[in-house]
Length: 352
Ligand code: FAD
Image 1 (cartoon, rainbow, N blue to C red):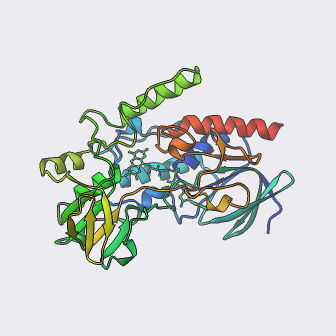
Image 2 (cartoon, rainbow, N blue to C red):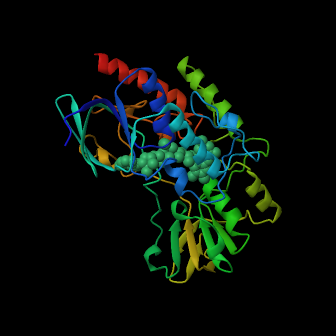
Image 3 (cartoon, rainbow, N blue to C red):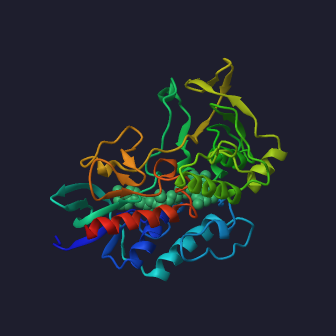
């Protein structure tokens, strides 16, 4: 048990935490990062082996230090993890691993964090725990009856073990398209999508999406509205693996899944498809369960916030949760501006 009271504790040690730490360090606040992983890299360590970023290094960088050149057009998973690890070392952030924060309580002005390494205390908390620990699978009728294998994209590593199988891939986002592109090289694939997949033009990658995010941010700051519907951040980016899959004519949707049986799936048009595997690329909730003693949380993990600040309790901020706490804030380049603003608010709060 330590009696020390930090100014700020950041929960989580991925890219969002590092962006916040960059600005906290400048403010010379006494802060600590608690991360439940064994080593650096956040959730990138758990993603599939062939995942690449959808923008080049200069559009995939945290504040202060640009990601080094990539061997290819887009940085690989390994290059991204390497960048995050080097970023931590460069700024010598105080990080303790592995420490899982189980719950937080507040007495007076001080938060006490209950963790796997005992209690920690702080005057303010920044939650930067991402989404990866809270995979979402929709409640499709008959799902529990399926006798084949089911997994979420969060647990997908590589396509090898699916060779020769019949694989249903569910979800029309980037994960669904990219996993379909991989698995279709070795297996017979069937793509289940709720809506028709929306492919971005070939020349629209993360650069364009980020420029659009910036235009929206500055327009809204001036009180103007900005129509960002042209290029939705959730639409499919034509990364090289997806372009290659298009050439093989495998990016074809069967429509929505109506139900699941012991041996396969039934599509919305009533057709039956035998299947050995279902891969759910159906997104994530937010990894905020450890906040449940402090604030109200909905079934996706969302809590009431004003931008990044929790509404129901003073001293708590949430950074990096995409559209919820900042448009494009779940990207390397997008999180910086929300981290900067949040740290300013934290610093003002601590002074007051
Ligand atoms: P995470 O990376 O998830 O880090 C959170 C950390 O907190 C983890 O280490 C986690 O283990 C830890 N943690 C969680 N709960 C606790 C707890 N209770 N106590 C202690 N520690 C905890 N982003 C880009 O910028 N560019 C891209 O091109 C891009 N492409 C993507 C493609 C796909 C298919 C996917 C799925 C994502 C992509 N992303 C991309 C998004 C990016 O991977 C995530 O948004 C990013 O990892 C979020 O960073 P984070 O720091 O907020 O969360």
